[in-house]
Every structure is written in C-alpha cells, then in structure tokens.
Image (cartoon, rainbow, N blue to C red; front, side, top):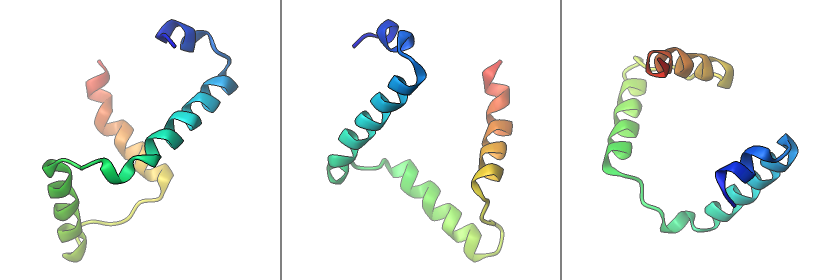
Amino acid sequence: MSSLEIQQLPRQEKLKLMEMLWAELGRDEADLESSACHADALRETAERRARGEETALDWQQAKAKLRSHLAPCQN
C-alpha cells in the first residue's frame, strides 16, 4: 500500500490499519533489541527518580511536555 493510498483512506480505516500493523509488530517484540542509548536514558531516568529529581507525569502532562520540547523542531 502506498503513502498516497493511505492518505486517501477514511480515518477509521487508517486507525484499523494502524492497529493491525501494531499487532503484527508486537508479535516479534522478543526479537527487537533496544539500542544502548535507550537503555542509558532509562537508567538515567531511574537514577534521577531515585534521587527525587524526577517525577511521574500523567499522560496529558507528558504529551504537553513533549510538545513543548518538540515545538522548536517543527519550524
């Protein structure tokens, strides 16, 4: 399926396709290795959390924080 074909799909069909792709990718999850930089980032976050320098965010807060960090990259 081409990008153009996907763009022309109704929203519900796009969501259905995305769910199918996600399920397919999830089947091979054990075969995927995270990069060392991801492991480092997780370790650093855990260390900051243990020191009380990192707090948990709910999903709405996390999205807002990510969007504010990514906003300069969008220009």
